[in-house]
Length: 336
Image (cartoon, rainbow, N blue to C red; front, side, top):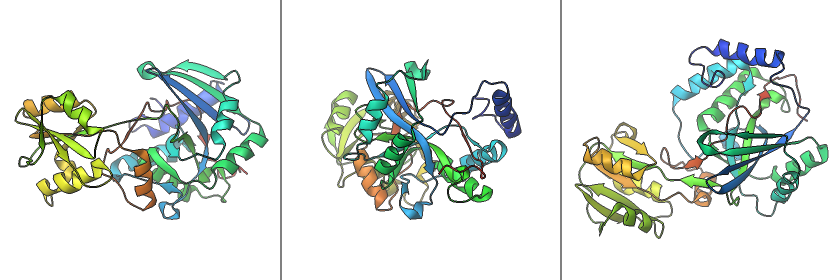
C-alpha cells in the first residue's frame, strides 16, 4: 500500500520504491515474461504477465468495455509521474483458442516455480519466470494479432497511455508499454461475478413474473436474458430483450425510470444480493435489481463494435495481487 496507495505522498512512494531497489529487496530480472497461477475456492487460473504495448482505443487492439471518470485518472497519473514505474499489472482477457498460447503456459508451469506465496482472500499463488528468447518469440507470435479486452484497470490504462505520451520515447521504448496480466477466455478458472444494483429513487417496475424467494430469482437468471427485482417485499423476474442483460436492464428499465438523470447519482452497487435486499428493506434504496454474471464473449463482441457497457458490468475475481512484478517506464530502454 505504501507504493500503490500512498495518499497524496506520491514522491514518498517513489523514494520507497528506489530504497527497496537499493537495499536489494527488489532485484532486476533479465528480459522476462511470467506465468502466474492462483488457486482459490477450489478453482485454478493461469495468467501470462508481460509488457503490453500501449495503443489508443481507436486502434481497436486494446478494447475498453466501461466508461471512466477523471478523478481516479488524476491520482494514478500523479503516481506514475513520481515513480515512473508500472507498479501493478493491468488485467486483460483475450480469446486464445487455436493460438497455442495455452500450451506454452502449460509447459512453463510444469517446472518448479520461482516464487510461491499466499495472497489475500485465501488465495495461493505461484509464479514462473520465462527468460528464453525463443519462448518470448513464440508468445509474441501467438498473441500479437489478438485484440485484448480490459478486464480490470480502465482508469489505469488510460493513465498509462497519457503518461507514455508525456514521457515519449521511440515505439519500442519501455515507456511505450505497460505491465499486463493476460488471461484466456477459455481458462476454466476465469471467474466473473455479477454486481447487483439498488436504485435510490423511482417508480415501481411492473410486468414481471412473481418469484417466491431471492434464491429462486437468482437461479432463474442463469436460464434467460433477464433481471431480478425486489421491492415492497416482493421478488419478480423481468424478461429483457437483447443479448446482454446488464445493458438491457439499463436501457429498458433504469434509464426509463430515471429519464435524463445521471444513473450514477441514483445507484448503489453490491456483489451480495442479500445486502441489496437489506438496503431496500432499510429504506436505503427503493428497489433492487439482480443480475447473472455477464457473458464475456458477448462483452468482447460489443467492445469490438465500439460499444461500452454500464458501470460495474463485470467483476473479475480474484484480482491479481500487487508486488509480483514491476516495470520501469524508461524511455531509453528498448524492449525489442
